[in-house]
Amino acid sequence: MIGGSSALKFVALTVIMAQLRDYGRLAEVYRPATYVMLTVAALSLVLAALAPPPLLFVLAVNVLLSAAWWTGIYQFMRYYAEPAESVEA
Image (cartoon, rainbow, N blue to C red; front, side):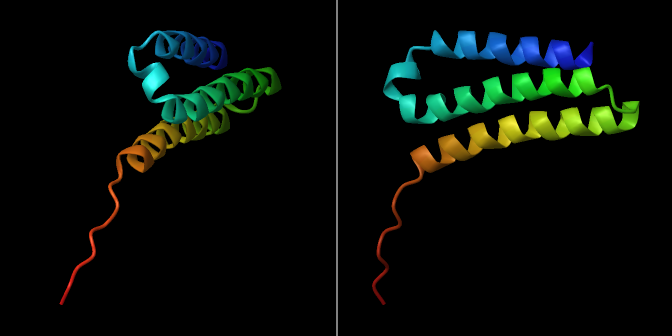
C-alpha cells in the first residue's frame, strides 16, 4: 500500500509539475527531476511487489524519496548558482 501510494504521488507530481508556468523556461531543471520522479515511482512499485520486511521496506522507500528530493534540490541549485567573481588581492 505504501509503495503504491508513493508511486501515485510521484506520477501526480510529475503531471502537476508539467503544468507550471516555469516548466518551459526551466526545462533543464524540471526535465531531469521528472525522469527521476518517474523512476522512483517505478522502483516503489517494484519494491512493493518484492514485499521485504517492514523495517527494510520503510528504509528503502525513505531512500527513494530522499533521492528524488535531493535531485530536485541539486538541479535548482545548479541552475541558480552564479559564477564566482574573481577576487583580486
